Length: 195
Length: 192
Image 1: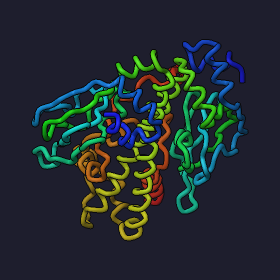
Image 2: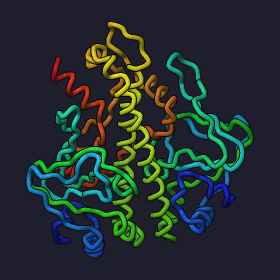
Image 3: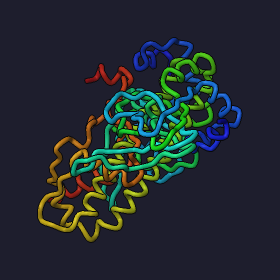
Image 4: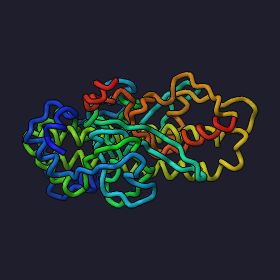
């Protein structure tokens, strides 16, 4: 089990000793094939590390019907952000086969803060780090896509300024939030200015 | 910067905790119009805005775009706490501004002390990062929605379901939905 935790990318910043310590706070979960583990939109406050088996991640497709969008295999993690900040699950997850997973939730994090505060801060740091790395990857992709498509598609994008969305795409448009490298917003701002 | 001045921004924290925070950070003042950091520069710290206001700025084709204005109680540049990162935007003082600069190493020691304030700070940094990731993933989804669509005259419509689907295609499906805002530093509430 320890070697599973060691192989988890999110925890790569933890030492071997910290990985071993983390295991102490986790709960073992077993699921039969086909069991629904998380449901889209239901409250979530824990992460799962897959030790054996696999999860199937399904989403409602744009034209109805569930579509598998990802498989989560051994030493992969889902929901690592929810154990720090509880939030509704983003997708429905089923056990694709008989699956064993280790669960670490907000409750375990609170216990860890009491019993091993250094460890708790190391776990939260690991999640912060993994979010930052994902952010960097997404930002790079945005820049690449914009660079590739911007020149060719400027007239189309100019029209896109008036795009409609059934639900607001930016749910937290509060001006007091850091929005980071916001090339898309900046592009829209510029296009609006030219229109 | 004194602990008493910080107490208003971080209510519920003991003076001991605030002293620890001050010991782990450096007070830096910026006159209106000066830069806290520049896009593309190596980053090794983030800033807690204690007074004044700052603007997050991105230059595109030499043109300046203000992405956000941040007020006391906000954090900016938190990816600087992750090793080998570069600033992804520039930050400029909008008015005379006092910040606590949080550098990576001392901040690690501060959070390892395990005080409630340290935990709270760490949590806020995580929340800021998650929000930023969510916004970026939305932007990427929009960019791709335009990229995959054949040229046409109709304006593009992208709903939440389609966007989530496009995001899943980029591997960014595991983003908790947005009810995660949590309680921001209460200074924000007082201002609104």
